[in-house]
Length: 418
Length: 217
Image (cartoon, rainbow over all chains, first blue to last red; front, top):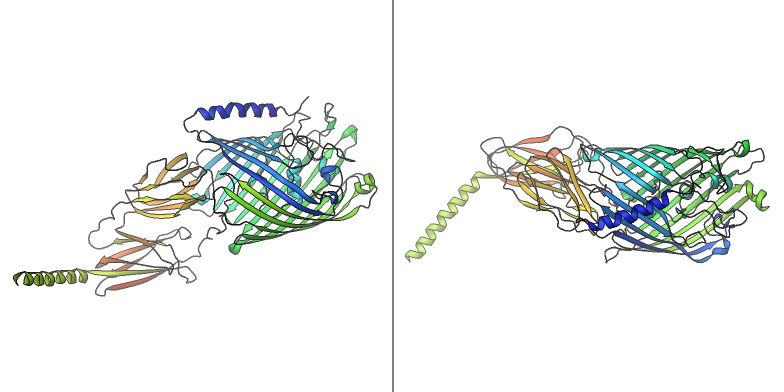
């Protein structure tokens, strides 16, 4: 059984390192943050992908009302001078396997820069450096509640369970106008990545799959829940990317990802084939005077499985453009998403295409107490999509337009709250 | 009566001395403009004497705090031999570094006032960063000039100097000019000598006001 062998290892590492940290004279109490995000939801969405349906929203028409958006606890502990440990755990308020589970847990090595260069190393469970939208703590977006289709998918199906190295050239600290970074990651335990995109397609949500969790709940129907963090073929995947920054104004990220899964490999213990998934992503974020921000991201790839020589491929591509403006404590954002899953199946299995508009208003009141933040967000989201499986699996029309309005009140407490 | 006469005599003598001293001093007024002619606030000006001898300004003990994940102030101009204390008023730890030639140093992870002040002996420009929070950026300008300062919101700065010839040098963290930008000024017969220095290239973009304090990825 090739279940996530690193999980007990990570916990053992944690159990070992924290007392070690406690013993040292540079010990400081772990820095922490606790967030509670509650939602008032109105949705006409079809049965949500969270409950085994083919709706593209997190909340469907049966879930309007008061909901838990996310409860989150984050810890950051310095382990000596250049090592640190980060843990990020969340509860999403649905019937996942564990009520509270990890979204990220990693050790970071961050030595001092030397002659303008700095090397960084992460080991554990974390998000690959792909999103320019999900830049806030907890991999949240400061612009909207629901992530773009691209970043929803990345949060759902991908997680680096392995190591990542980054070499920075700190030009802005050397009198230049830009910084450069080269990133490379080596990972395992992500062979089912691609399953969701081929069976449910893209959706727009802010629910990240947890390390021990799954997409879909225990009572998912008709689509069964999908577990994503398994090693099936014992072949590590990799990613490699470049990031350029022009001062704090423009960020460009380019990354190639390939989980290098053997599409014919099968794990009888969990009854799953591996999905060979690879893609390229390009993103640009530009920020200007007057509080303006613009983000665009393209993602183009393919997932492929080969059960008993069936050799089925699903090319997919998605893109979004977001424009946002901050005026004092207020922020207005609008985003357009477009997404497509093609199929090489003659019947059209798994084909999906659609687009979405998102508009959000965020208000962050000034706080007179340190380490305490309030955030109020109102978001309107409309997704129009055409999905083959709606007709094939559910017997409903392929085309659907779903609308979701959320009012979120988020309270964050702790030294890391910001 | 004799006492009053003495006081009057001393007052007249003192006035004469002050007048004589005044006759030896002049005011240098420097205006700094961007390449498109707008006043540039916060530009650093250093003044060296080209004639006669000069004495560098006396060292000082300065403070650069860290508040809300930013250096406060984000630029200090200090005479060589000065010290700077770097307290951390945030509830999160910072880790200060510089790999600038004029002063390479690190302050390991800390909160509060943990370390003694750092001494800056070598003249030059020092760029500071935090190894935990990359958006944090600050500068320390170390000078051996007898006179220095920064332009006000109108892009202007003035200083009283003995009569003579001086070289005024302009620096700003956002300047693109690679060569030194300066002017010669002669404080001669007039009490006030003014010069306007205009940058030759557009400024680099200013740090965003909105900041990136919530940036975590």
